[in-house]
Image 1: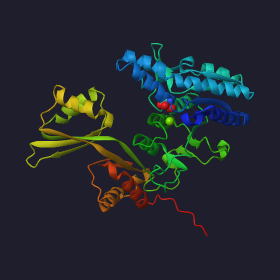
Image 2 (image 1 turned 180 degrees about the vertical axis):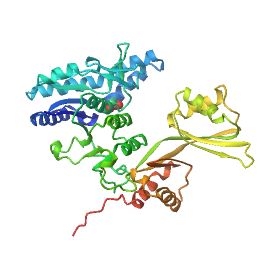
Image 3 (image 1 turned 90 degrees about the vertical axis):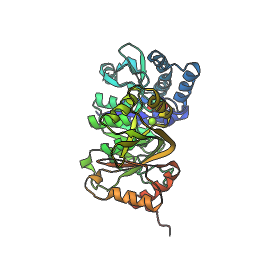
Image 4 (image 1 turned 45 degrees about the vertical axis):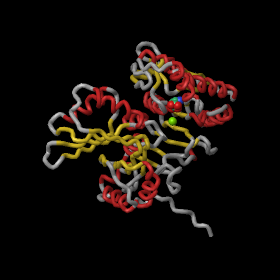
Length: 419
Ligand code: ASP
Ligand code: MG
């Protein structure tokens, strides 16, 4: 008997009709002879609504306030887990709803973005052994202080993968409103193709570079624990074993390695340039240290030293929401090196080319730069890793750039010939 984890996202449980549909998917796995743990998100829109309520009541950013906010925000998943368990019972399947604290799924105390520390499997295993389906509220856990925590937006993916790892599940099926992971966002690039397989490393880059299909941390966990994760469509009526989907695999299991597997983009970028910073040891630490201390995540960085070597311009990117706070830190934090002026631009975007094939194929970067040049798109900052190249460009060129690159790297779906 195999143990399967099925995770259903917000759109999959958006209303009662969909919850009933999800229940038939669960029933199918049970009837196939599997033990099933289900992890659910809140009904779509509900978490946003709960976050809005909290913001209406309070703008306190203290840990104590965040802990109370988590108590509210975690409620959406409790509702769906209960409703799905009720529906399963109506179908004649023994089922029980679980909150995070009841397992317990233990986290640290970072309210609003807690990390999972341990998952106690005993109670659920006992319940599964009695033939009961476990329906667990995703996105939530409990801190050592006994308070409800949440794992960051999109965190029910992370709950599902962590639970699959803790229970050594045979599969972790992530059901969502798309039928898999695509070479690029199909809303922008019409010719994007679904990938049958993608390596953990590539998926990790895609998730952190802007593809919203899976929460980044869930991919990290899946990679570290080698969890067999599949992304599947809830709305495709076929049973799980016939759904096309996308499977996360080890790099070695990719039969043919393309030069480029996919493209990602993020509009959530803002550029800051510090002009004429004095160029001496410790300036970077003097700038990026205080930003980090204020929880501001810096992404791309480039530094140009003047000809005489005495001064340097430092350009870097932060999330749009951090721009104002970042500037404040640069103006007020003690120890920031002297600079002449600061320029900012919130109208920028990052586009990235990703693929494990880059390790063995030369020329991927030069092809990217040439393609963008041909479209007269200026590159503001470049950053690379072994399997990705990212560039910062003017936001208004995102679509043009992605479509051109998609074609150049041979990713376009072949149109079906009509006769
Ligand atoms: N309901 C939570 C959110 O909207 C968690 C999730 O859906 O993964 O962020
Ligand atoms: Mg999600």
